[in-house]
Length: 76
Image 1 (cartoon, rainbow, N blue to C red):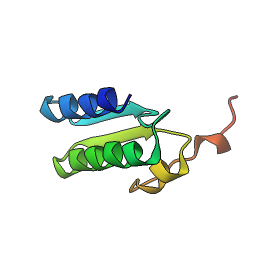
Image 2 (image 1 turned 135 degrees about the vertical axis):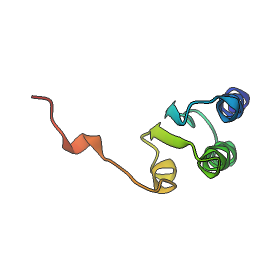
Image 3 (image 1 turned 45 degrees about the horizontal axis):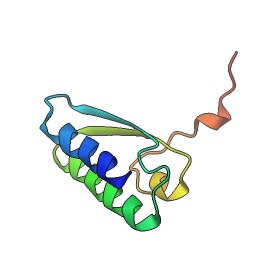
Image 4 (image 1 turned 90 degrees about the vertical axis):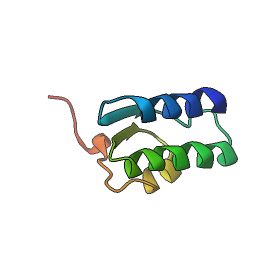
């Protein structure tokens, strides 16, 4: 699983788009592999990419520059 997550991040670094969307990029990973993926995502921001992550993982959310908790919004 880690290999596919890191491969995704690696591919994203070569794309011309400035926005990277990652939905649960660390799901089913142990803590060590989660750290590897998160370091990789942080590297993308160093390359002037905007990284948007959807997650339930508080560790992953804690790495973000900004967190938007959508659970506080209810559908109308």
